[in-house]
Image 1 (cartoon, rainbow, N blue to C red):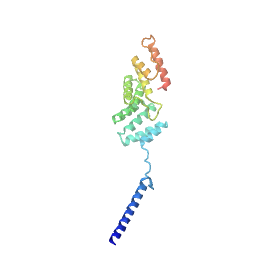
Image 2 (cartoon, rainbow, N blue to C red):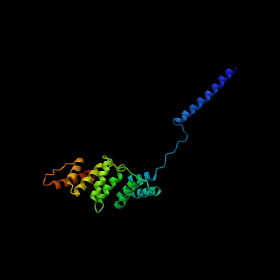
Image 3 (tube, rainbow, N blue to C red):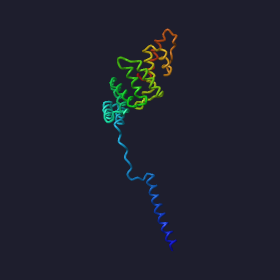
Image 4 (tube, rainbow, N blue to C red):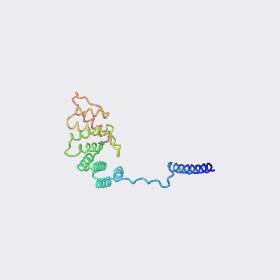
Length: 210
């Protein structure tokens, strides 16, 4: 009699365990009645969304708010730098790009931004533009700007070609022309400098007038 009772008790325990395991498995495969909501976008994410929409004043405000909350937010500094660059506030943009780098940004973005503005900021510092562009390409030789894919490594090499030419480094400028898929000019030609300039200008129009 005791053996039969024990068997019934054991069978009951096993049934309860099986039901518990079954319920747990059901929950594991997605039957949670109240799934966790998606997290709200951060200020930086909102800033980049505004940037991509061309709302640069709004983007600047959002990136500034993110920096106010965390002065070491290197992505916020990077975003603010690009926004200020689009707003043609070059002096402030370089401050933001430097802040991004000083805060630990390791990607090519701030260096590309600096290369662009150093080529355009008066008085032009071509040597610094060359250094920034080369640093960017050493980090990412196939660079494409995530938030505006029309800006890529070709624009960076065009800046190098323009800056090398402006500083009289014609052979280096000619090498960049070749890397851009343009027609390299003959250094032995009497019209080498004029031909090289014309080719760089043609590449600038082709790439997009960077």
